Image (cartoon, rainbow, N blue to C red; front, side, top):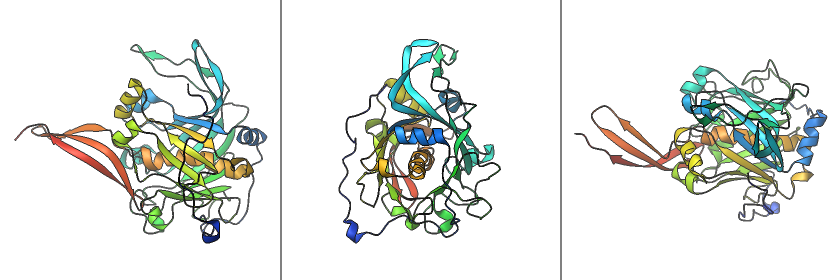
Length: 361
């Protein structure tokens, strides 16, 4: 397990002067003006007490055998507290605090993987992992259980294909990525209900600006009816072989410039042989969220928006990531395609690849 670093792992450039930049994030006009608050005391306590989260996808085995078509699930853990694994006394793992379960249609995951519309429930987790099953000599990973007495902490709502054309150039409203964050269990809410005005007000909202930040992946963050409290920014190039060699960093800042005073998200590079194999055959990723020096000054709703936004980043950038190498052929000819990285441009992700013929006529 990884220990918590002693300092902010990202040292980005300084932001522009605040006197020269107005608040970057704004609520969309379709968002209701009411300002609901989070009242779940357990959720509030966790957000206030934990400043370093590990977020990783679960169901590695099912994701692999289904070629990524199995609904995504995530385990959010407290990196500062380790706990024993029941049934595997030799193992320790960060203490689980939340379980996130995607709810989406099979057709959306098959045809629009990474851009599908979905709801995701964030459950409180039991604070101890259990030993998983071993199939054909392969350990499938630890098991995690929701806390049945605590219920749902928040609900994530993301509208996708085909009601919004996300994943292409963000030149107009219908192409701009966004996610809404609701307190508790938002049933029977469906993706897109908030934008259509058919749902109660969310407590948080993340949305890509028009043209998506050009070469810098950008999302504007707002919460509880404010004029915006921050912005998320990422790298121009990511994924492919680049993800095997280096960590991928996203910053949460008050203003554009990657100051990261609110926090940073790190997608871990492949450190072991198992990590390399996972990158080649699955879309299962691991992240770390490290709070910045101004994180504790945020409201509960703003903190919840930051934690939920990590899930949104995974769908936007890494559910569609191509393997470092794969083969395409038609029975007579074949080509080895090596993905060096993905390049972000105005909301669209463009693969940078090398193609090597493997013979044939």
